[in-house]
Length: 41
Image (tube, rainbow, N blue to C red; front, side, top):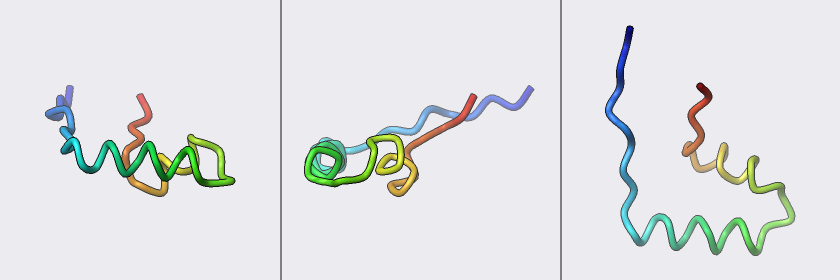
Protein backbone atom coordinates (compact mmCIF):
# COMPACT_ATOMS: atom_id res chain seq x y z
CA UNK A 1 0.00 0.00 0.00
CA UNK A 2 1.11 3.49 -0.78
CA UNK A 3 0.64 5.75 2.22
CA UNK A 4 1.22 9.41 1.55
CA UNK A 5 1.70 12.04 4.20
CA UNK A 6 -1.42 14.17 4.70
CA UNK A 7 -1.18 17.60 3.13
CA UNK A 8 -0.98 20.54 5.47
CA UNK A 9 -2.10 24.00 4.49
CA UNK A 10 -1.18 27.31 6.03
CA UNK A 11 -3.80 29.34 7.85
CA UNK A 12 -3.49 31.97 5.13
CA UNK A 13 -4.23 29.41 2.39
CA UNK A 14 -7.25 28.04 4.29
CA UNK A 15 -8.59 31.54 4.89
CA UNK A 16 -8.20 32.44 1.22
CA UNK A 17 -9.81 29.18 0.11
CA UNK A 18 -12.86 29.75 2.31
CA UNK A 19 -13.22 33.31 1.05
CA UNK A 20 -12.93 32.15 -2.56
CA UNK A 21 -15.49 29.36 -2.03
CA UNK A 22 -17.96 31.74 -0.39
CA UNK A 23 -17.63 34.42 -3.06
CA UNK A 24 -17.54 32.16 -6.11
CA UNK A 25 -20.52 31.07 -8.19
CA UNK A 26 -18.87 27.66 -8.60
CA UNK A 27 -19.78 24.69 -6.39
CA UNK A 28 -17.47 24.30 -3.40
CA UNK A 29 -16.23 20.95 -4.76
CA UNK A 30 -15.14 22.64 -8.00
CA UNK A 31 -13.35 25.40 -6.12
CA UNK A 32 -11.52 22.75 -4.07
CA UNK A 33 -10.48 20.92 -7.25
CA UNK A 34 -9.28 24.20 -8.77
CA UNK A 35 -7.12 24.76 -5.70
CA UNK A 36 -5.77 21.21 -5.86
CA UNK A 37 -6.95 20.39 -2.38
CA UNK A 38 -9.19 17.40 -3.13
CA UNK A 39 -7.95 13.86 -2.62
CA UNK A 40 -10.21 11.11 -3.86
CA UNK A 41 -10.05 7.98 -1.75
